[in-house]
Length: 184
Length: 184
Image (cartoon, rainbow over all chains, first blue to last red; front, top):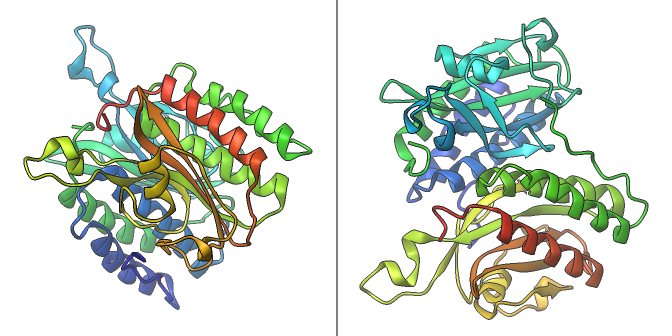
């Protein structure tokens, strides 16, 4: 019953993301439950990326579209919100309105935000004062943002374009393979 | 937007679990989403218990009743299964049949299993070869097991009756306060 997923022994970040793609494919192979798959994917990214980069990456996880606060689920118009999903790291904010902070802005604008210094980002939400840089990648299903992958690092410039390209591939795999019941 | 949850600065494990009860109450206060609440509770237990005990606790998380494999959801009789939920630690097994390993046995028998040496437990499932002791506490809703809290430690005798009492209280709070849509 040991999971059939070999941890990455990558020598470089580029190699790590190549391995990660295969690992995420192994995670979703035969398992469509989004909670299960996002939990295991958070673990793969968190432990793997810390090991290969040596950087103090302190949070890796997901926020999903909050069905109880989606604009279509209420007669009173209100903004879509994100709600905390599976993650690795310390306790986190539970809800984030679209448009607020790095996560909410990436969700609203449906584009990756690579923020080299969070203190220079207008309206940054400080879930953990230790975080200094962040990358947020949207999960897009049929043209709609259904969640985001969020990574925080304790140092500035914790992430770069290699992370962006790798995480965008992971986002695509997850969106296409998971059953999103309860989210959409 | 910093979460309104103060991390435990407990001097002893007994004190830690007293604080944990309050922290879990704060997590579930105004938030009923089970994914969100179990994700934050895993983080509170994992980081807090490692800090207060100094023990190499390497996995803290939840398995939930798998609706796609529940005995009532199929015309062919089959056993209930657990499916991986939010956790802190390395990649884990995704599904566990009721009756298999420590998690599956605790779920089937609806009782806490405090296993001081996993290698002496018949049918132990080695998700992580580094684990040597384990405690599993059922989540019981209306007389039915809907999931388990699972903690692993790299040393034998990683957990004791103080953990059992504390985790059983946390299980009760979570069962009573979360909305279990998608699980039951």
